[in-house]
Image 1 (spheres, one colour):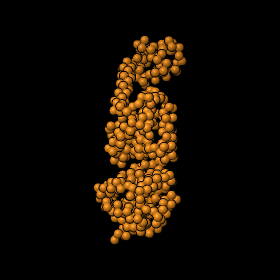
Image 2: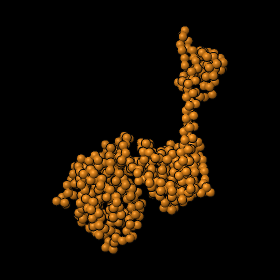
Image 3: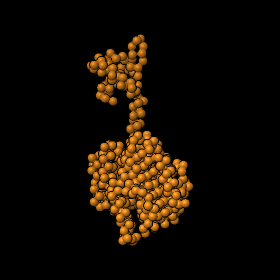
Image 4: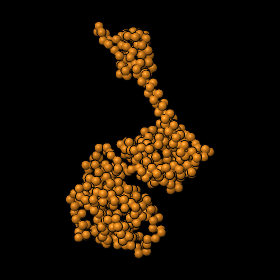
Length: 442
């Protein structure tokens, strides 16, 4: 309520019932100001009126509203008390690991922004992965879309590794439009505290307190305890493809990875998308999520892939096993052809085949792109300079599978490289590629 509204409201209560004239006379305000203010009070429910003898009489009627406001304030205070209690209950699980000499408390949005950007600096300097657990979207709500989007793009540009666990209730929150990182969702068990862990630093943020409160703790024991708790939740949390989604409207043009998610492509009416990824790991994760969303809806139960080399399964055998179990669940048959016929290709093929796929090596198909076809979808992965260099390494007779291979592949998958992928929905072309590949298995 403004000062003018309060002044007029007080006079209406004092007069009990009045026309507009006495209010103008007593307050000394302009007639138009009084009219507008009374109308505002009526809209807010503080004033009612009755027409009689061609005059309008106003009465104060806001007692119930004030009572409701007080109840809301009391409820707000109780909610904040509960948040504080939940916070300390949560922290009590880790109290034995806290070194109070290494605890700092900060307040305000600007302090949070500085501390958040500091995470990127530390992760980049030390090649840390940071992990986050919280409701999701609260940073966006408090700092605004501009800062949130800037930090997500910066994270992607700097190739910061991160994993995030958020509340599935926030799945349609706008922060998802530019969220970057390996994300899973929980339907319950999310802490009221937003926590970031990187190295031996734990950053706890209470976004809903006034002022915003940040607690920064430097403690290896505590960070490790939080990390263990995170890893437990990570095992039971679900990726987006397991959740029921109410996706936003389908996009209306070609898209890039910066502004589209796998589910948007699956639900889109657009038949052609161009995506760009910063490394092979990004491309792999996006494809995995896309397949898990699309496979349950497939009409054609055959998955086709055409690759230059088959290095992925050797360092990701568990992932291959999970994928093949998923394919079997939906009765998908998997056929793979590979240009390469090196030692690495043979080992990779044996892993795929061990879990039920069928593979042919040394098939010299045209072009230097890799393809995946399932149903009417075609994934074309352009073999850029980075991948062509890898092909030379794999084709070299000196390249062997030894103890250095896994470190080498991990760096290879996360090496920054602009990787282009074209996804199109083209039934005729998909059918042609499928028939061509299947011909090698007759």
